[in-house]
Image 1 (spheres, rainbow over the protein chains, first blue to last red):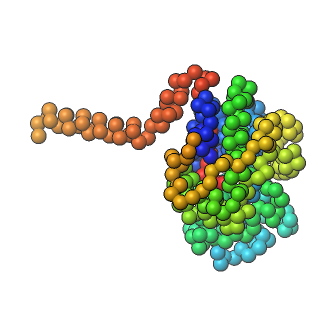
Image 2 (image 1 turned 30 degrees about the vertical axis):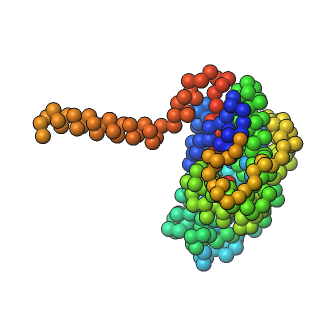
Length: 300
Length: 51
C-alpha cells in the first residue's frame, strides 16, 4: 500500500515500506526512530502513548479481519468449550485478546478460564496444526491459512462479538507530525484511497491478493484471495476514520483488564486532522485487467 | 595447490560471498535515505503481513 502511494506521490513525500514479523519489533523500531510510522494493534499504540512514547494514531488500517480458530473436528465446538484450553494471541496488548475476553465474558467464562500465550502471527497456524495450541485469535490471513490447510475452522469472527471491530491502526511519530504534516497527509490520503479501491469489489481484491502476496507479504496469492473474498466483508477497509466511540470501548476494556494504569484522553493518543483531511478522497482510479499483475507497471 | 593459489581462491570466494550478500541483503534505498537531509528523507513505514 505504501509502495503504491510512493509511486503516486510527489518525490519529496515518498515512503519506504518495511516488513516486520511481529508487533514488539515495530514498537522498538518506532521508539528508536528506525521507522517513523507503522501499523500497530490499537491497544499497544494506546499503551505506548500512555507510557510517554511520542506517537499518535492518525488512521485505521482496516476493520474486522480477525477470527478465533480451533482445530477442525476437535473438542471445541462453542466458546464455552474453550475452558481449560490454550489460546494463542498476537500480543497481550492486542484487540484480539480483548475480543477473546469479550467472547469469554459473553459466554459466562472468566479470563482465567483459558490459558493465553503470545505468539508471532505467522506461527499460529503451524502451532494449531501440531496441537501445540487448542485455538488462536488472530488477524487474517492466518485464520484463512488454517481453513485452507483443512486443519482449522473458525469458531467466531470478530463481528459476532464486536460491531465495527478494528485492529491495526496507523501510528506516526509526533516529531514527523510536527515537522512534516504534508507527508503524513499524503500517507493517510493514500491509505484511504487504497481502502476505497479495495472495497469496490471482488476483482480489485483478487488483484490486490496477487501483487501483495507476490511482492510484499511473500505469501501465496490464493491464501490472500481466500482472506479477502470469503466473504467480501471478511475484512473491510471503510470507514477508517478513528472514531471516539470505538476507541473509548478499547480504552474501557483495557482499563477493565489492567492494560492501562490510568485513563487517557482520546486527544492524547489520536490526531484526527489527517483522517478528516482524507474524507474527500476517492478510490484510486486503477482499473484491473488482464496482465496487470506487476505493480512495477502501475501507470503514472 | 600452492599456498599462494589457496590464498587467492579464498580471497576470491570471500569477495564473491560479500558481493552476493551486499546485493541480496542490503536495502540500498534505506542506506541512501539515511544520508539525505532530514526534510527530504523518505519515511519508513512498518507493517506486518496481516490484514
